[in-house]
Image 1: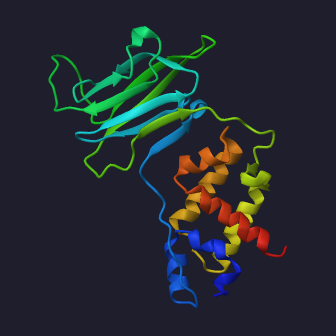
Image 2 (image 1 turned 30 degrees about the horizontal axis):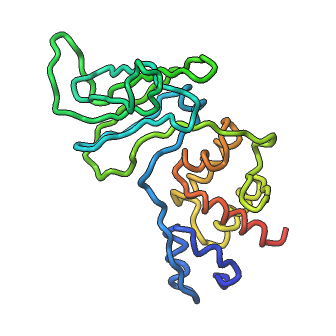
Length: 241
C-alpha cells in the first residue's frame, strides 16, 4: 500500500475496501458516506423518453418538481387512483403549476377498475414556447425508510464536448482521466473491480458518452457522489503517464 499522504484527496472516497486498506496501513482515514436523501435530479430529455421511478412513503409526500424548467403542469393522470392521490402547488387551470405532490392512501375500491402495485403517473407540461411534453413515472410504494424526497426535472446546458468534465476553477478534464484513475485505484487495491462504486463509475461513463447529460447529472443518475469522480481524475493527474 502506498503512503496515503501522497494522495490526500483519497480520504473522501467512501469505498469500503479503501477504508479497510488504509485502516490496516500507516495513516488514518475519515470515510465520507454518500448522501442518499434529497431530490433525484433528472434531465428533462431523459425523463420525457422513459419511465422514471418515484417512491412514495406512508404519511409522506413525494414531489415531482419542474421549477428548474420553463414548463408548467397542464394535466395529471394516475392510472390506478385506488392507492394514490395528487395535488399541485397551484390550480392547474391557473397555468402556473410547477410541482406535483403524491401521497399514498389506504386502498379504495372502484367498481370495474383494475389495480396495480406499481402504477403509472402521466404528467403533461407546456413550456414558454407552447411546446408540450409528456412525462411518465412509475409510482413505487414502499415502507422502507425514506431515502428520496422526490424528482426534480431540470434542463442541462451542454458543452460542445460531452466527453469533457467542466469542474470548478475553469478546469476541463476528459473522461479518459476518470477511466485511468479508476484503473489505478483498482491496481493499487484502493478498491476492487466488483465494488458497487466501480460499477456506478462505469455507468457514469456510459451515460456521459451515450446520453445527453451533463457530468453532474450523469453522476446523480447512477447514484455516485460527484466528488468520487473528481478524486479519480486527481489520481490520474498525479500519476506519471
